Structures are given as C-alpha cells and as structure tokens.
Length: 291
Image (cartoon, rainbow, N blue to C red):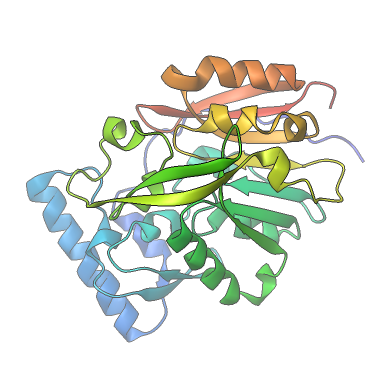
C-alpha cells in the first residue's frame, strides 16, 4: 500500500458566513426548527447592536434541541455553545487534514460534544474521547447514545496534564468550549465576558497514564485541543507521543509554541503545516519523520 501523499495547506480564503453556516444543520422536528430559527434571529440582532464576538445562536437557544449534522445526531444544550461545535466547517484546517481510516486508533483530547470523534468512528476507527468538563462529557455520552454507529467511541472523563492530581477547571457557562485549567486563559481570550464563571474540581491524569491500558502499540491520530494546556498534555504524554503517527494540535503560539515544537521534535515528529485558527491560536500538523 503506497503511503499517503502529504497534503498542501493554505489558509482558508474566507470564513463561512456567521449565520448561514447554521443552515447545514437539520433540526429534528418542527419545535426544534422553531427554536433554532428564534435563536438565529436573536443572535443576529445581538450582533447588529452589540457586536459581541462570542455570543452565537446557541447561547440564545431557550431549550435543548436535536439536530443532525454531517450524518450525525447531536443533542444541543440550551444557552450553550454546542451549536458552534456541531456545525460542519467550524475548524476548516482540522477538517481538511484529519482523515482517519478503518481500524486506526484515534485519541481525541478535548473531545467536546464529539464532532471529530464521530468523524473518526464513522470512518471505522477506534476512538478514545477524553473530556474534562463533566457536563460536556455527559453531553458527549448522550450524543453517542443517539448514534448506534458510534459504539467504537470510548469516553474518559478527566483532564489531561503534566502530572496526576486534582485541578480547577474554569468554565464560562455560556461558552464552555473555552474551559481551561490555565488560570489566565479565559481572561486572556476574553471568552463570553458576560458569562457566569464556574470553577469545577476535576481529576487530572497524564496522557500516558490514561492510555496505559491500551493493547495497541501505536496511536494513528492524536488530536489535542485543550485551551492553552497543550504543553502540559505533551509533557505528561511523552511515551504516547513517541508512538504517535500523526498529531493535530491547537497551539497558543506565543505562550507554548516553543515547548510544543521541542516536544514534537524530541518524539520524532515533523511539523508539516501551521494554519492560524484565531488571532491567538494556530493548528499544527505533524507526522513521523520516518514515515
């Protein structure tokens, strides 16, 4: 079997329109369609007059709804940012590069409500989805139950860090996708400044410990999206990293770019592309140098 060609990356020429992108979602039932339409209209009015970057339609959703996206069912929590993470194309660089195959092992650190874990499961991969926020972890399990084909997704409810112990997860209630163990992260990215802040005690494990029971000799894809804690994840996962074939990692370049680059290099991984996701973060793509 010939090796896969290495993809060429170019930054997206433009963003999908902030509101028309939600037309890709298929609400399940008339009530869900009505609630989604109402949330979209309220968000459009908010953006017109308040110009807030972080209050999207999901935060105006009054009740939970079920939607289908890319062939997968999601239960969207009310007044949350779940909608953002169910829309196809919400991370264009990652979606273009992440192409799992049947039988591969995918480890998704910071899995959220499961969009990329489900993409892997639909391709026939075996998936370990790791999520620190207990409420989001419950939402992930609910979404698995809504999709019979997602039985290959195993969920671990814990945070991943450089050493085991207990940690405090800061969770903006209206934008839980920005949850982080970093005490300064939510403040620095100014996530949902009007959102109440939750402080949750969570179990912290190292990546090597969390995956210690695996029978597989290597990880085919490692996805890391942990809101500023990527250096700590790699530090506690040096053994896993040495057996990883491909990694897609969100990097706060100004804060952890150097340490991430050093960890990848030490593990024998070559960074073959970087694409900016936001003014603060980039996605880095690396494969084994000996592949």
